[in-house]
Amino acid sequence: MIRVVIVDDEPFIRFGIKASIDWKKEGLLVTGEFANGAEALEFLQSEPAEILITDIKMPVMDGLQLIRQALAVYPHLKIILVSSHNDFVYVREGLKLGVVDYILKHTLEPEELLQVVRNCRELIVEEEQLQERLQSARDVELLRKRKLYEQELKRFLIDKTDTLFKDHIPGWIEHTYTAVYVTLNRVRAIEEMYGFLHKSIVLEQFMDEFYKRFPLCIALSTAESELFFLIPTGELEVEQLSTIRSKLEQETGASATFGYECGAGSGAIKACFNRSKEACWRGFFEGEGVFPYKQEQPWTSEGAHLPGIVQASPYLNDEQLDEMIERWKAGWIFGGASPAVLKEQANRVLSNLFKHYVDPYLLVESFDRLVKSESLDELCVLLKEQIAELQKQTAEHTDAQPSDNPVDKALEYIRLHYAESLTLQQVADVVHVSKNYFSILFKKTTGHNFIDYVIQLRVQKAKELLADTALKIYEVAEQSGFNDVKYFSKLFKKISGLSPVDYREYYRSNRDDPKRGES
Image (cartoon, rainbow, N blue to C red):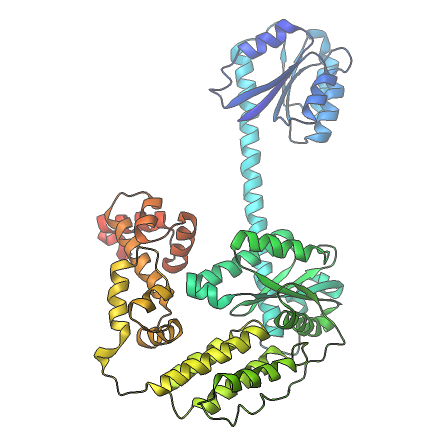
């Protein structure tokens, strides 16, 4: 609704103006009536309006004073003057100030007032449409520049080119900035519970939050679960990072570790990128949080090898295994080697122990689990688990027939229950194999992670319901196995390229008019 304020020291004039128009029918709302300019101005300072209808001569503060001060607060305010015959000098002054029109008190007719008010309304609508077009153009230009900056920084940092094209980066890069590296935590749990696409949705939410807070920043996706931000000094106080991290965790249900380093000039970008990433590594040893780069922190490319295990037999007993791994962990508990180096050592252990004994696919999947570990403690636990699991597979190795594959039974169970709450552990229990082994076997057989396969079935069911029923979107979500309609809509669009509403409309229009789908 367009808001209107009426100001006149004569009560019957105020009453006449208000009674002359069906304000609601015209899309207008009278929010205040006042006897002088001072009262009206005090009101306007806390309650904005779009149209001001005011007398000229009033006690305390006259109409011209009110107009000047009101326009200083609301430059786009549309003003209608109510005047007497002998007020022409003041009317002329009002017109100079930007008054839209004026009406004479003694000849005031409802039709005349209505037409003037409608003219104001049309001006307001035109200005709003113009502002929307201008904002849209600004948004398009901002997105174009943002994409250009992202591509150039990616080429420089990820593709490792030697130079930056100055025309493809913002000018503030030559001044001071903060480099922030972000690593998503608990990635394996996210992928197992919600699927691979959910992780990408979470990362997009992280990027959106940074861009909302720091519109001038540059954001990059540097790896499957990692982001990098370059933020100009003045937009970011490093103390804000903890607040941002907490807010994102609350909104997405996902946690992340932040590392940061400050720098200046394009020549320092690569160093700041590497240092913020190294700062992020501290989370691997110290736990989740926000970490500044510490120059005294050494990151060696070689560290002490896992003692004894590399040459050991695959049939280590639990005590030997625990002792060797704990001794190795103790040497790195305060850092000193990058997480990648330590994960490589752990993978080398599995390779040397089992490369001649187990299916190479199972071994590669075990490698992947170790690579996705997010702390030294987790790496050690997973290493023990994978050794135990592969020992079990070695002991049980037989020339099993395809009919013995537990995934066949699992697929049948999933097809019957995909619209219900379904977990990896639940299905593994149904087919009587361990959760980890079932996860590996399922991916080997189907080419998909368990939850991604389930999501595909759910989305396919949703497409059928959207096409063939009149169910509401939230009902489609529920009957397809999704508990959250907003998440369902976001995921559906991510997979199909259309929102559920657009998919239904597109499907039905093409079904009703087959030629339309061919064009």
